[in-house]
Amino acid sequence: METLKAFIRPPPPCFDYKTAVHAETRSTVAAVHPELMDLVQGGSLVLVQKRRFGPVPEWRRWFVEPERIWVLGTSHLSEKSAADVERVVRAIRPDNVVVELCRSRAGIMYASADDRNAPLLNSNMFSLSGSRFFGAISRSINLGGQSALALRLLLAVFSSKITSGANRTFGDEFRAARKAAEEVGSQLVLGDRPIEITLECAWNSLNWNEKLRLVTLLFRGITSPSLGNKEGDFEIEEKGSDPFELYEQLSSTYPSLLQPLIHERDTYLAWSLKRSKAVNNCKTVVGVIGKGHMNGVVYALMADQGDLRFRDLAGRTSKESWVKSLIKGLIRDTIIGVVLWALYEQLQTAF
Image (cartoon, rainbow, N blue to C red; front, side):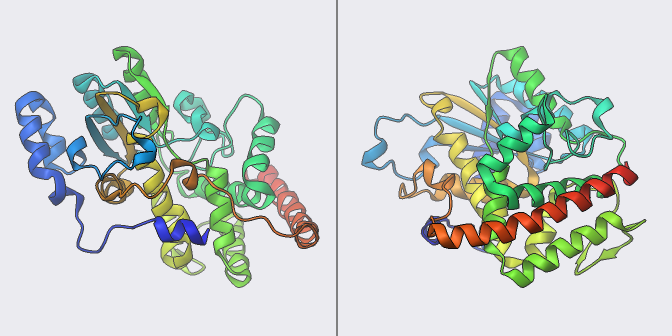
């Protein structure tokens, strides 16, 4: 992934998305959607117009980018965020609504209150959604491999434990986006990179010592009676907190995770908003993303120099020799088998 790292440009410390587009957003909203001004003033809704995008390279001259991209920052466990999404989509009536989900997590948009206690299905950002559990397992392995699957299962249970005190299901804003999009006739677009690829990249970015520390930390968090205020080597949020903060905390503790978990996904989301086939030749797009992505996504929309193709962001790591791959695979699969067995035993007693 070295080549990809060279192209991904995280926002410089001086960049503030609110300052960069606030004046233009405010004037537009005041003129055509004054009922949304409170969201603009709070910094959760911004407008990035086509003229602010980077130059279009020759190889994609055929592609017509959207005229206006509205980006709405949300909290995944907030009732207000869900209401805000409905307000924005109904007011703007965009051609497309792009949500921070991938195919593997699309089931979150159809979850209900009855799914609140389903730790591996629809309860958090690491969910294994779908009508058939083993089908979801197979898809996860095919895209990201066994290591990514094991990490995903651990994070799913760990995240569920952190948020088990919440009285709301995860992702109400995504369900609101689906409902509102259907009402106004907007096309719903899955805008996030497949979680399997993200976790594979994240796992591969760690050295073996960091991998061991991370797995140990997650197991301790899952098996402990109470998370308390601190677990392992990073702070644990109170139950009911926004699960996105788990990404931020992991990235803070393991800096190498910043690239795959945050920066690459910010760029992928930006590309989905302005360069996916679904938005080609559209006038207006609304993006529904976690508030922690706002700065990176807006920067990626504006800083694009046309030197990165969409498929680069979904690329896999380079191929190893078959001998090395076989040896590593045998070791990995043995470890993964033990991890999955232990996780299954834990689930049997915990849930």
